[in-house]
View 1 (tube, chains in turn blue, purple):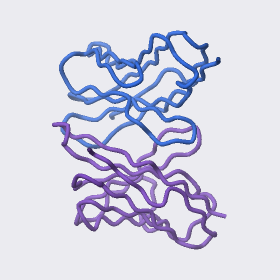
View 2 (cartoon, rainbow over the protein chains, first blue to last red):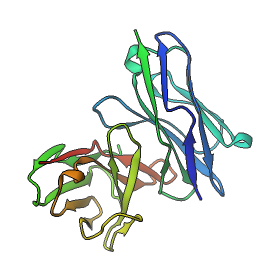
View 3 (cartoon, helix red, strand yellow):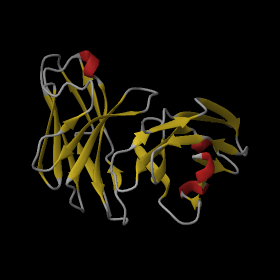
Length: 113
Length: 117
């Protein structure tokens, strides 16, 4: 079965700290991978996506993610977080050629000033 | 491009009444749209896949007679929550599928917060 797992349920860190959120997927074939962010009380926004090519993907707001095929992973990183990065982060995957997304459970990130 | 809107953004209704939520793709056509439900502090749960001109495909455990989905055109899908109860209170999110980026991808609407009193 297709699935996405996010390792961390809740991450708390201070401003300027580095952030890395784990995401692993289980799919039978080639996948498209996504990271979304949902700020408190707001709607889902796309941070970045990977379809093919360079496995290091840069997104908005200084986020990046690295696709490691051998590890079935697509971890999200940010070198220096800000208080405004406090949000819920979701990893998602879809089979290549498929619309249907599988979402991870999400990681709550709390950045303390 | 690839903007998806939802209306209303929030709605309060009384128990036993029905409420309709619209999802529109504003600048592209979408043969496939999706409806999700999200409870506080939880992930998105896919409710159904809406296909233009045909019946929606519901996920296991989702009552199709309670959550009526109509995909009447290539830019509009509606979700009607019939005989709503307080446990139906949730955040409902739609998305529209397109290959604007060259691959199949979903674009999400801003969501509709439903409160049933």
